[in-house]
Image (cartoon, rainbow, N blue to C red; front, side):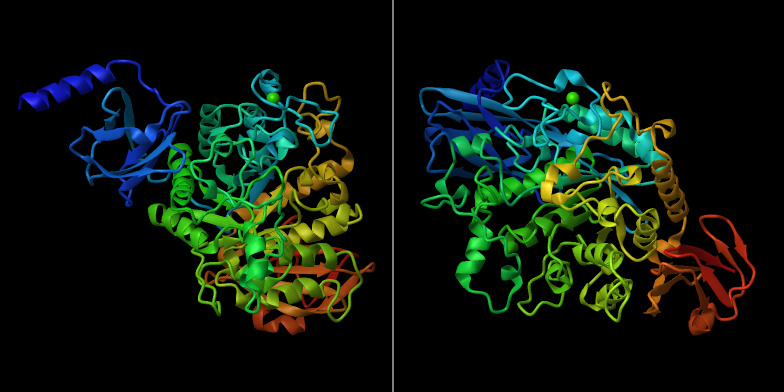
Length: 614
Ligand code: CA
């Protein structure tokens, strides 16, 4: 009894003194009530030999299950097992080496009780992708901060321009008004890199928003404000590589946390090697282990400590920020068994969640390989619900830029969908006309407004979860061969701008036409479950005219007609009888015009019709 009292007294004394004596503790806090009751906590002290310290925990509901020491003695990892039913609170942890002691009060928080907080995303949504550095500068005080390599140089295409979370928050009305329902931000975590830090894909602190974008608290406030307006948030994550300036990279816990080579070795970027039944082992190894860039070390996800660190980090952001989904970068590049485990652990904790993986190839089987439920020859199961549908994007951009033929022109839209049998769940694919990694869609359409509208009509009425890239609605142009040109600032997002595209009077006639067209289509789509989940039936294109239908059991029918010709066409609709079944009237969903006889439909050169049938 006496010893116990002394121990309690000792804990009280130690914990009433200064708290965090460590250089880093990650995750800095955790939650009670997860299905997985374990959490692995990293302790790092830049000057102490932590490996010689014995940790002890004073708690009835938290057990110190494992202590893992690494080749770098400045680290120690504690695996805590949290009892089911444990209460939130502080867990005192004491480290002693016989002479000295260190303490840490580890916080266990209560999980959010709001069941609707984390919603996932699906085909009823339309995503709006924003590059945070390039959207709007709401706070010039964070433009250039001490302790950060890069400040703002707006005249430099590869430099930072000063856009931030405040800028996005200030324009949520604009985003909401456009009619999208979810926001995907390119990565917002700290990228304190020496060059090209604006894009966000070289993370230097996995637990912290880049202060030049704002604080963690500002990010939370943005999400809460968005949620209150009916806008979801999708967080862009990167697990394949890490910024070379990340603090972990400056003092690695173990040499094998990253893939090491005698000299800088790049990935071969041939993601097909990973799913190739005939691949050479050395090609797969170089693909997975080679570095993405010399400023982005390649993470070794087969190191069990780092693997756990990364999985917990993703779960931490979901629970901490209440994000609705994740977009995972460079999906085929990390260790694929690790990725399956990562996705499974997230989905186990958040069944309503959605994760979309980037597989940047124009080959359907290579994309479908990564979607959960794929019938893969090697039996690989990814646990990944959604994939980014690059083949569909390619069909739109190429098909609308060429003449019609057996397999060209609008036949590409048809053909790309005929191969959907290969996807376990094509309606959960994220579809788009462009994003930050390709030429702007308007550029690809040769700045032709009719073609521009046609691709968007297709995107927003065919299957899938559509995503728009910021500025498409403003006809922003850019050629990816000079890639910052597709990542330009929105005029009006900076107070020194002399044009403000966020308001109608600041836009050109064509810009307003594009904006109004997209808004009309998005507002209409929002309420049309027949577009979200209705059956898709399409007909083989004739004379470069593509016709398809969305139907449901409530007898709603939407007919879409796309004319890829420089002349008007009159379409005899007898061929579509199996769907039309005696329907005779239609209403144009975008103009409200009523067509009383649909036996023949006239359509303008490069016209797109969205018809609701009676
Ligand atoms: Ca700023």
